[in-house]
Amino acid sequence: TTLEAILYSSLHPKPAGLVLQYGTAGFRTNAKQLDHVMFRMGLLATLRSKKTEATIGVMVTASHNPEEDNGVKLVDPMGEMVTPTWEGYATQLANAEQEDLLAALKDVIEKEAINMSQEANVFVGKDTRSSSASLSQAVLDGVSALGGHSKDYGLVTTPQLHYMVCCQNTQGKYGEATVEGYYKKLCQAFIHPLHLGVFASNCTDDQKHLSVDGANGIGALKVREMESHLKKELHISLFNDGSKGKLNHQCGADFVKVQQNAPTGIKINPGERGCSFDGDADRIVYYYIDSEGQFHLLDGDKIATLISTFLKELLTQAALDLKIAVVQTAYANGSSTHYLEDTMKVIVRCTKTGVKHLHHAAQEFDIGVYFEANGHGTVLFSKAAEEKIQQLAENPGADDERKRAALLLQNTVNVINQTVGDAISDMLLIEAILAIKGMTIQQWDAIYSDLPNRQLKVKVSDRRVIDTTDAERRAVSPAGLQEAIDSLVKKYRQARSFVRPSGTEDVVRVYAEAETQESADDLAHEVSLAVYRLAGGVGDEPKPL
Ligand code: G16
Image: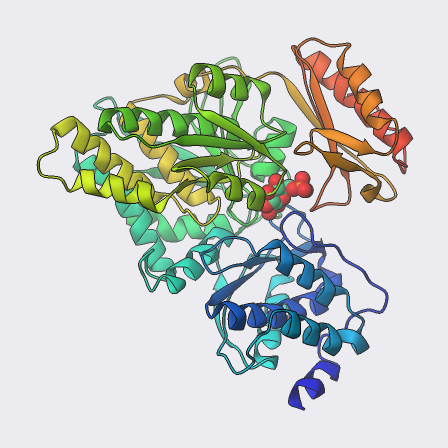
């Protein structure tokens, strides 16, 4: 058959013996190893589309990884990450030797009882990496090999592609499936509160200024594209726009979060707000430098706190009885969890790293705010919650305060990209909240004080020797590692530490927090040493900071 002919052709062959794992957000490794994976993900997306009778998305990006890496993220019909069963199929297909590919494909078709005469539709997007052009072509080849239709969105952010998929599959109910439509929907929702007259009176032109570090990636291009839609209600100074610097190199959200330092290439006055996107613009962190030159990071935990405080106040004003929860991971700063639970009295859940896990947990509530500490997150509103908000906003009998709150909640629903964490959409929501509350970044920062913390990476020969439990907060293997961590943690006050294998880089991640920065640094170093010794460290032993 043609199918066999195509599959056995020399198009996008797999290097014999190469085995890749489906990681935290899909396959991710050096771009040179990914051609066959992309072709096969094109095949898989086509099958998934036939199965769901809906449009599926494939995004070519390695997000926060260095420029020479690449990767692929698969998007399910409502814009969410692909389900675990299909992650399994993705792994089977990606790793099948060339001569076994047809059998692997037939296996999926059989297991899922896929009707091969069903039409298929796949949306494809890519980031700005030099390897992304040919790799996204490989995806498109895969789609057409199985007779699927594809739409190539070209250069888009990951969350934009998720958005397009959701718009398409809701027949435009979520919005128009174009980049223009995306800017229009988000920017209108951003500007609307201003028309309602609810931006605080102290919101001056200075307050409307924001410095953005585009990580030399796709986010920078898209912020430029969006600017005219903002109608000068937000003045953006864009740095690291890709015109000279290298993608994610000493800049971007991951660099800023891990180094706890400002990105290179940004000019920012003391006290002013800045923010950094990552390489595919699905993460954002904020920061400022005080008059003493001290750097202050406002990460995903601070963002979740700001957003959930705002929403909770609106719910009270609207007298709407909706259950709100915040979903975090083990990386969440202990202070944030205490503040949310003890002071704000919201439900807090902890899941494993990876947006798919947080997203899932957040769906269980009327309003689920989920954020990883690294700045990846969004807000989910249940259908019932959206309906209640809309009814109130449209109720002519409701009093002014309730109505105003309902309208603001409605704008929040519209400005937030509910399909996945989105740096651009999160930025607009944060800017709107600060403007509405007349709040400075210092006041936001002062809501609670972070416990000093440190993140390190340790190279080991095979990071899979580390297995974790309890939402990655405890290691079950290798033997003795958790006991070692427990006894190290006991040496410090307010201390906590955990280790886990990264699902995007070939490293083990170490996290530690404690009462002082010195303690956090020492603890992180000692735990790194334990990992190095007990989990097969390679290269030089970790050195003290
Ligand atoms: C991806 C995931 C995130 C995760 C991050 C790091 O982010 O989408 O959920 O936090 O990787 O994962 P790990 O610690 O397993 O390497 P991105 O922005 O790189 O796609």
